[in-house]
Image 1 (cartoon, rainbow, N blue to C red):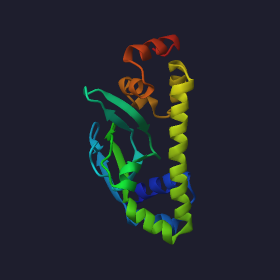
Image 2: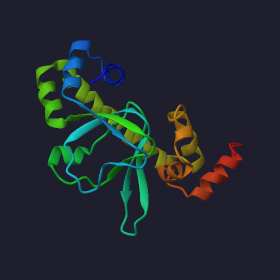
Image 3: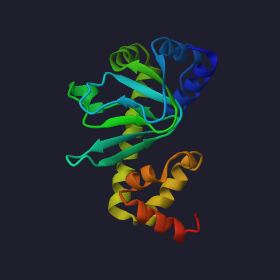
Amino acid sequence: MDMPHFALLHTILNQISPLDQALTSRVAHAMHIQHYPPNATIFACGDKVKTVSFLLDGIGRYFYLDRQGNERNKSLVQPGGAFTSVSSLVTGCPSPFTTQAITHCSTASVHYSTLIELSEQHIELATFVRRLYERLVIKKEKREAAFLMQSATERYQTFLLEFSETCHQIPLRQVAMYLGITDVALSRIRNQMGLT
């Protein structure tokens, strides 16, 4: 792994849980860097996912495809996030969703079995894995609460705060799908907020 990618990875991993340089180097040695052009699939619905891919740069998404061929965004991912399917990692079942690059994306991927093996050897990495799961659960709870308790306008305001540095890179169609509203509804909200 080259120094620029290592520096990005070190920053991202330490945002989740502090790891010293030596342990970060050991994890980095087990990883491989991948680059995806816009709209490239990172993994598809039906794939058996065996890796955790940390997003170093770019914007990506998780989405479901219904029987009518309609896409529904499950999540948007910005640098510091990750692409994986926990159900696939843990049970070996196929992923129920697809992940895709929205912009050009670079990821650092590690096999989950390697991550677990290293975490059994290093308490700091075990803490890292626990905090990674905690972040995932908290993100899921917040998204669930937003859909149950907030209006579409409030959800959009929350999105603008969460993605304040990257929202300009995300097409409005993807934002609308993430918010669970139509393109027209998002356009109306943006008009009311004076953003058009």
